[in-house]
Length: 336
Ligand SMILES: NC(=O)c1ccc[n+]([C@@H]2O[C@H](COP(=O)([O-])OP(=O)(O)OC[C@H]3O[C@@H](n4cnc5c(N)ncnc54)[C@H](O)[C@@H]3O)[C@@H](O)[C@H]2O)c1
Image 1 (cartoon, helix red, strand yellow):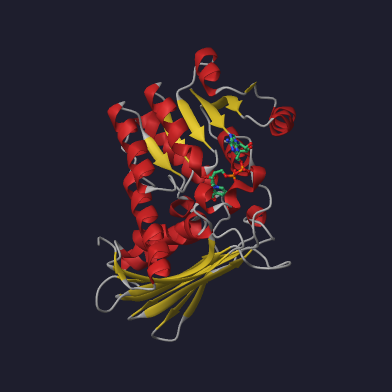
Image 2 (cartoon, helix red, strand yellow):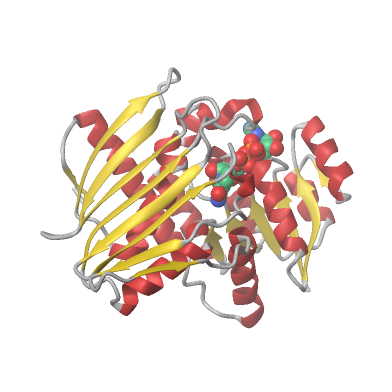
């Protein structure tokens, strides 16, 4: 049995709590939330003890795991407290809004001997997992290009609209786009060059972005992301992977937010010999799958190899470099 404290009672905290409930041997024993109405709602719905002070929670409750579901600008502050208290950490993506904070989170966890995993959930999302498997098996031949997208209307639920403030969330070009940048890294490795274009919101955030990444002379990706869609535009994501022997495509449209993620669309594989295969994958909740993986790693004393701090730092580095490319209107080397 491992006891968990969830930090935050917002959108993703609710998703995590439902996932934790399904994991045998895991028990959420308390949550931390500073906003009284949100705390009351969460407590009434979930019946879990509430704390408005994280240090008091740590004094009064025995927990082995802290699950950080707070706004991104708070990740470092709470990760440091949790790691110093020797708690294993699951922290939502993006790991932080700056590389300095991200590195500090990684270092404090390693200094205190606690495990750290970041919520890069596409690594546990069946269609993305299967796509990578198909690529690694060589079915598509050599990969020439990846195109991926993630588009929605602006999130309305965030506390005090912190998510729309570029200094607090990084904007959609960090917060949302980072999912697909991490997927591209997972599939194709570290990009060498980046050129991006973007549009800003009236708050100055780059909230719509197209990042062009190159991985060598013959492989590139084009990733589009943003939350500047209008009206009833449905949450949409997907990818097309072109190889020398085939194409794999997935095109998914959910409700206005991501809540209808269970409704699947098939992966479609087109091969050179003109065969077309549609693969419908089980609609298992990827948030459950990532937390279960984290939990199993702790229970079995296994190293965390997926959604690690280093992978999260690389994804953040690419996202920040894309922002820099927009500001400077230049092609940039990732390591420059
Ligand atoms: N993996 C995913 O698909 C996914 C989806 C959504 C959000 N996220 C990430 O999860 C984290 C939380 O996002 P969310 O959408 O749940 O946000 P949210 O605003 O819905 O929830 C954040 C909670 O933290 C609380 N909080 C505590 N201290 C606060 C402070 N000083 N300022 C503002 N809020 C404070 C808020 O009251 C709120 O209940 C972010 O890092 C976000 O990027 C990940």
